[in-house]
Length: 294
Image (tube, rainbow, N blue to C red; front, side, top):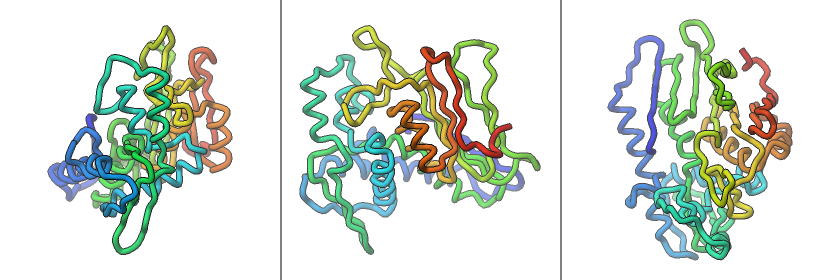
């Protein structure tokens, strides 16, 4: 997935590093848009209006993606692969940003709404338009959850690319993590959280951004416009029992901005930390955190 991973276990671990690597390789071969032979890449090449058999794992993530797409009113949309490509945010890098015409053309074939699912003993999907799927905003979280299932010790922490799942305790204490505050000050104190059999995913734009026509944009697209999201948020952290779900919500909230993100967190009773951007003096908003605060 183009990133690093960490697994920490307390006690006598009965799993080898090779077993973890093999499982990650298998997951990558399903979900990677960088691998031309991955299941997802091959699905993207399939014709429209044709039922395609897919693995249980891919079907599961696509089904969950459609649910979160509806919950977030379209702000989480892994059906925007064409838009990701023309902006150069994915496997296909480009130095030239797209024209308005190119954005509108890609937008017409960019939504997971144009994917139908057929559940049963065998799983099938059908594209009703020539969409390209990009699951990079949910696959890392899925991988964290899958690696956690492999571990046969009750006290462990799994992290892939900053998405974290913690189970049990760290030497009789809660697993404790810090969320970086993006105010560029060496004295900035991280926001300290305790995880109790939970996951946390963070999405931010204070490191991964680009300048276009004199303005600063994040590498997260607004699926409704096809343009980089213009949000008042610097980062979003979501705590949830499932890393995959936290991963998807964090991306959607970054795209929608603090007002809609707050409303979504309250509607779904999500535990969330929002850090507003420099224009808002990096104000921190904590929602439904309960016992997670240190």
